[in-house]
Image (cartoon, rainbow, N blue to C red; front, side):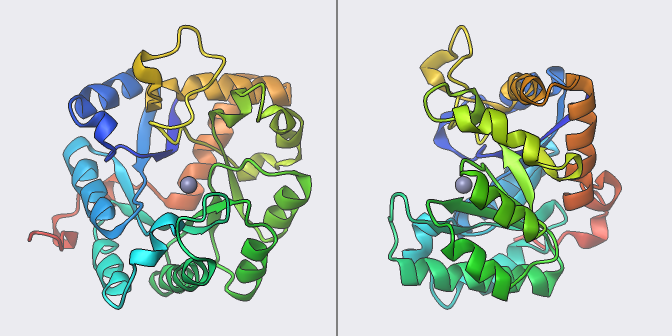
Length: 272
Ligand SMILES: [Zn+2]
């Protein structure tokens, strides 16, 4: 079994002292490929360094929480980072009307700017949406990326179907293991076509609540992805091996993850 964790925040300080052990543990657990989420310009650059160092992949983008910090240099900086051969997507970007750390107009402006960047570069989009339906879908209708994933999907049926109609892939996290907040997902994942489903930990966040024992400091990590796979497979009533094969195939279809291209020396622009 070979899984892809499409979203792990491995630049987070929680991984500062043992990042390479975390990745080794993931590989041992069958999580052979990991995409490190970029959440701000400096974090995206850090994600490419981690990806280089540990043979992983990365995204380049600004999370809606940080939209208020964006300015004229943001998109040029992301464009530059995205030239790195291990950067496989633009994002995470989107809207977060749950915490509202940035004003809505700022969130929308920089969401659109990143959608346009992704389309300009021909890269898939790694999308974040929290309590932002239907505005999120409206924006996607007018700036429709060719390939994108709604990462960490936690919404309800109408939202899911709006995203599927937009052609999005759907990323499922350990939220589905949460007996308080994730119960609806157990039924809802059956609505996701086999060729649109992706798995992710969103580590160090969203540690599966039903995991026993809970990890130290309740830190989630990519090695726990098989636990999420089992929960999804159970919900679908399908063998875990099949779901693993589907989701890995989908991750490759969306992101490429071509090791031979990533190590081509001619494509290394970020020497400085
Ligand atoms: Zn997110």
